Image 1 (cartoon, rainbow, N blue to C red):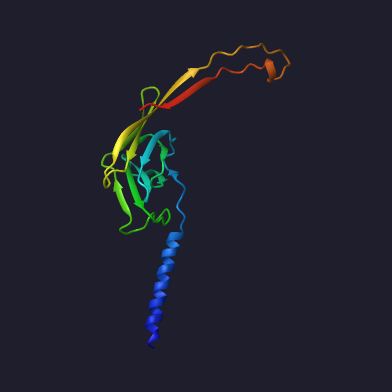
Image 2: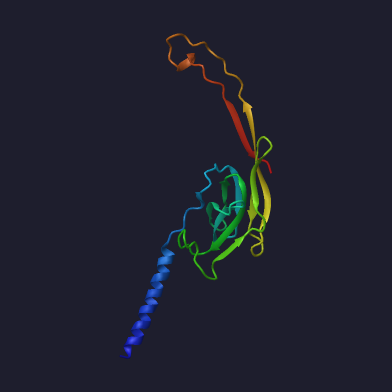
Length: 192
């Protein structure tokens, strides 16, 4: 009868270890886009800089509706950039060390931190060819983020016209007789 409390204690310890092992067995997702629920094309740049040691799940919340628009997984300390759809979003970060799946994220407890940026960020086209996004730097003290603009400038430049050779009747659309349509050239670069 004296051994019963010891056996129960051992079973509880082993059960607790098994539970922790199961939580640790969940493989974290690859870094990058997890999902985009907006149905809009993701074309605006968002770069996030973090310290190593903790991974992050970033969720963009639509300011108008409060709905989740997009989520991405960020490996702490690694370079991270994702393209997001147009709109104005609040950015929510959930940070932790032990991934427990998309529902639980990093779980509850002292190791998990949830925070939002103070101000929403706008992702839009400015002018004729500037895609306006942001860089969020979380490497500072606490949850204070440093925000800077990031822009992709695009310019369309038509190529020089090709020499056109008249197509002979009955010829195929290949070889030197084929009249290729004129092409344009879209150039994109980071401009701020």
